Length: 536
Image 1 (cartoon, rainbow, N blue to C red):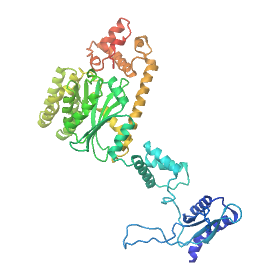
Image 2 (cartoon, rainbow, N blue to C red):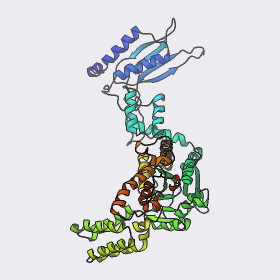
Image 3 (cartoon, rainbow, N blue to C red):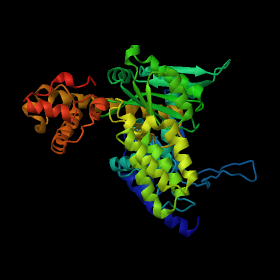
Image 4 (tube, rainbow, N blue to C red):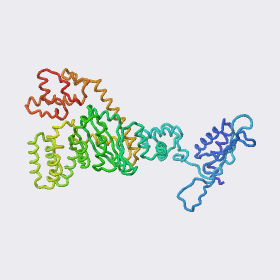
């Protein structure tokens, strides 16, 4: 042993001798915990080399031999190994035995030197950074509630300032926890087990003559109740990057009277083909209690396979196309074909076409559009052939205002639902069980918020609607309804003063009294009758 090595271990030896002289330990465990704590203070990990227990056997004595973790020599048969070892045959050894007189344990130092340098820090040590039972339970609970690993690690260090755990150990603990939940089941078996445990309504479809699942559909029982109450409009769209298998997730949502979005159902589909969509929409149709409750309006983007499936499963429903996606597609083609200095003018005229309030106005704006883009035939042909000629009744205002869509002319609601789900997921490479966990948590939060909004409607009345005119509506209609009626009241002055046409679109699109109806009620001093409000 050279002088440098003796100096390194000197403070460590002194600590051991002082404690050995001044302290008697109550038990074997107390000895080990003390030695481990002193070792950690000096950058050394103490491990058990040998542990003997008499257990009443004649000739056998209690004994505990402790040593440095670097004791011994790693034996590798291969000449070139990708593994590594921290063993350096360190001679440091402590002998712990019970007192010969009385109760307790004592320590003697067999060898108080080390043949290696002491650690400056133990952060990230594979053994010292391991989680104890309490910390492991905390990590499991936080994993269950989708807390990110970095936040879990910060919380552990706040709870225990001496904690030296590193992120990789948190990830390993999370993985072990998930594996323990699954047990002997395969991923798909565990997914179906989770769905059944939460009492979800679900269906699966297998490939022919095979146990391999093609599609799976599930929904929460409370979502079925909401669907049958607010069944007027459905909004559908597929989202991606929710699982490691790249399966598209079909999400179908509805809207409540309080203007909140609720999820109708989810489906993982093998492929985005008409056959897969037909199967999923058939399951949605089965959720309705009667044929009279089937949604009158369905909003999607222009996914041809989905559109064909809707026409097969919901032939009596009116199918609208998302204005937002259409405008985005037209804008992209505009940038491709139209010069930059004319793009804004062209898109403004396109919006006038979309929001035309009469057929005459539509024809006028379309004619202006054709004249403005007379030198860009390819762009005009694209707009007319791809959108206006086949689909104008599904997104142009003059036709959609005749439909009770409750203000849903885009698929923005379902896009927002995708965003909330992906926030819950935190990763796009998780398995199906992790994806379902996120959906389950999102649905529970969603239902809680919706129920709260209903309670506010029943209990509270906004001060702005305390007048006699709204008396019949208090505690019976939603705040959203009150706001829409209030906007029509603002239009009453414009309609009466300028003698312009009311249009009455709010009556057809929302089932609410329009400006001209409200004007008549004000003239005769009547209140708004409850039966003038649609059941929604």
